[in-house]
Image 1 (cartoon, helix red, strand yellow):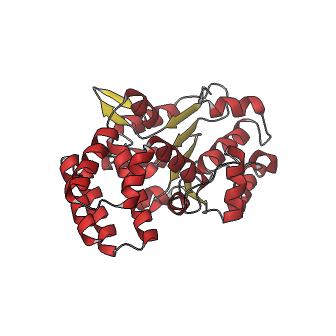
Image 2: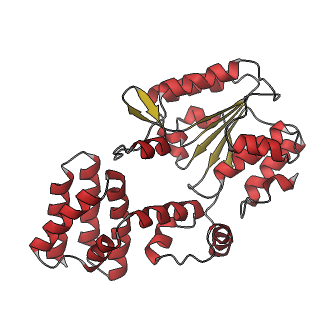
Length: 313
């Protein structure tokens, strides 16, 4: 049965708990997979549900259906953006070219659909299956609706994935079996990354930002590749004169969307630490991030921040 989880690296505690549940046929109504993003929580959910559907055995067919989200008894819920009366996932919002400064949310109508799913008879599997990504992103109304579902779970199995379980209602946490996932040690992280790109040489700032999460590093690589090299070089060198700072602010706002700008702030903070710049410059970037998230005019916020930082270094 451990073959189900053979590609889940460096998570022995989680594998042992999930394997035992399948072997003993004691699957709980609800689980909370907690831990950093990008360390295998989503993969573990798919493999565990594969075991639920296939009586504890690996099944290539069921794995493919679960991975593609086309199993009739599976509901996979992701946080969404609201746009013109439609709910769009992060990937759909990217395809639509939406500006995304604020993070997506799990919404009340999405949580209500989960209750309806678990209340009906499953089509093929022995029980309905629900996975909720970024469960901590629920607003109060959605969280209360989920709590009602957890109080009467029926015969389904519900898996919450959360990088910040402390932000969930304590009553929700108490109704779920906690499965903890840990950050990976460097050797284990390298083993995962060799599967994706054995030739990649990552800047030290990206490795620091990933903090033991292969999935986070892959996401940081994606952002890194989307930022023009010229902008990276100009930020790394720091503007030396007011006109340079103003021109850089203009080019950053013209060339990058809101999400890219927020990511670039995280990268630049790591860069400033490595360059030995003043702590006040790093704190100034915290203020810039807050301003962008508060919908201050981006170019003005960047201009003032770059002028402040150029004068303090």
